[in-house]
Amino acid sequence: MYDRILLPTDGSAGVDRAIDHAIDAADRYGATLHVLYVIDEAIVNAYSGDEFVDGAEGAEETLEETGREALDAVAERAADAGVETVTEMAYGTPHEEILQYVDDADIDLTVMGSKTRPGNYRRMLGSVTERVSRQSTAPVSIVKTTVSR
Image (tube, rainbow, N blue to C red; front, top):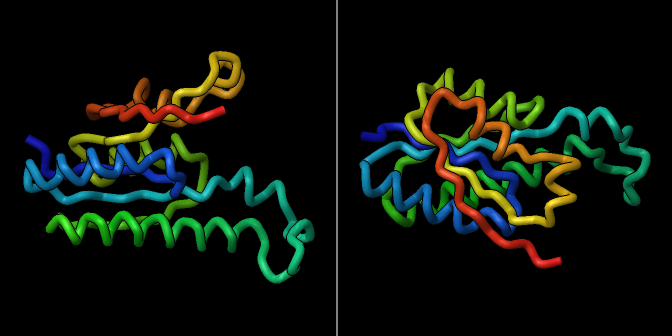
């Protein structure tokens, strides 16, 4: 049923349940788990790097390091479960890059975490998960996690 499952991750603790769900689905279906971390270019372009205390790293380097750590952590958990993984880091607008990856890699299922937040927050900012679920050509499984206030 599913040969290629995509798990976009932002490295936050709130996606742990989605990681477990994606690894379980990949194991159950014998699928390859694709793990994607998108560096939001709007954040990179908004900061020159002067704001960082040590001056050695800018936003891009910090986000790349966070992305590598997130990708490696998921790949390690998947390997422990015997699931084959492909990791990828992309640059751009997160929901657009995820949707492009779905099309380019012929993804059968996307598993995404969604943090339950107060209504005003969601109305003002929306979410990457909501955008992907509305626009994806492939099924999207949303795994909810409650975020403490």
